Image 1 (cartoon, helix red, strand yellow):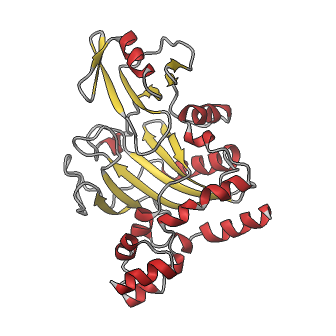
Image 2: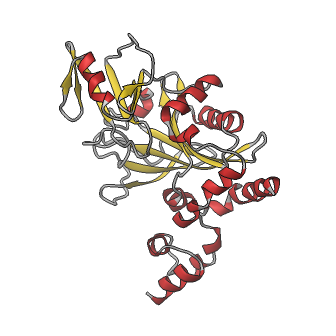
Image 3: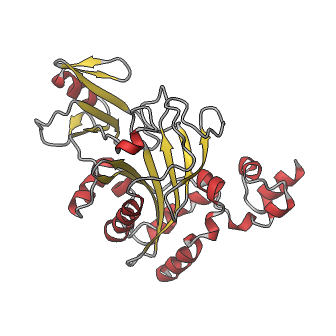
Amino acid sequence: MLRIYYFAIFYNVPPLEFVIYGFHLRDRRKLVHLYLYSTDFLALPSVNGLSGAKDEDVGNKFCFANICSEFGLPHVPTIAAFEAGRQITPPTRVRPKILFSKALRGQNSLGAEVWTLNGRHYRSSRGKLFDWEQLLGHLRAHDCILQPFVRNHDRVASITNGKTACLRIVTAGDGQSVSHVVGALLVVPVAGLVSSTGGIVCGVNLQTGTVIGTVNLSTGETPAYHPDTGYRLRGFVLPFWRQSVELVQKAHSRAFSSFFSLGWDVALTGRGPVILETNSNWGAMHHQLFSGPIGSTSFSPVLEERLKLCV
């Protein structure tokens, strides 16, 4: 216990992360300086600010989608967006049979709901029932965005429960023309969830796009097979892995180069990868749990070079 306090005071290691990363073991403690801790993320907005990054560009999902459109990046289109009690997008006649709504700002699928057309009404994953105009009126009361539901690639669908799986790829950009991939996870939904948030987190090998480990965020278990489908998770090879990497690298270096590091959420569809959203506060714990310290990747040297440019 005293060692936990010591590392918290002198190395800025949160107690939970001390335990998770196994720093009670002598050999593990040698790596303490290579890990990225939750407390370190408090400084990243300042790093982004040095390059003139505007958090609203990634924090506001409607703004983010517009930037993706401007740069021709494959992403989930916006059907409607709502803010301060009004619809901020033009009226649309596009009405897919399955819709997905989520908060305009925020992470972890905040306020997410799936809407399925049943006759002339949309029924939500929470049991609400509205016709089209009633649905728009309901959404108008919340700051949110409405999008078409994204269907998984057939191979990905086989290991999920029908909801969209999310590939999280983390990049670090040099602020000029190069973006480096420093981590990747596949988050798979399980029964009772509207999205992949809170599901099974799978570590992904950056070279091959293969699942190397799992943890169920609800139970803490490390399942080899999906509890709903029985499909084997470990060893699963992601479709369109290389294309996904190239997509987020291009998106970071071309459209969002003012941000140092971003966590990209990508859906793997039958037509290829599409960007769902990105986050500047992406959380390193599970990346490091499966793949080791972020500091052993290109994250640290890229950050050093970027800071030199800002001085």
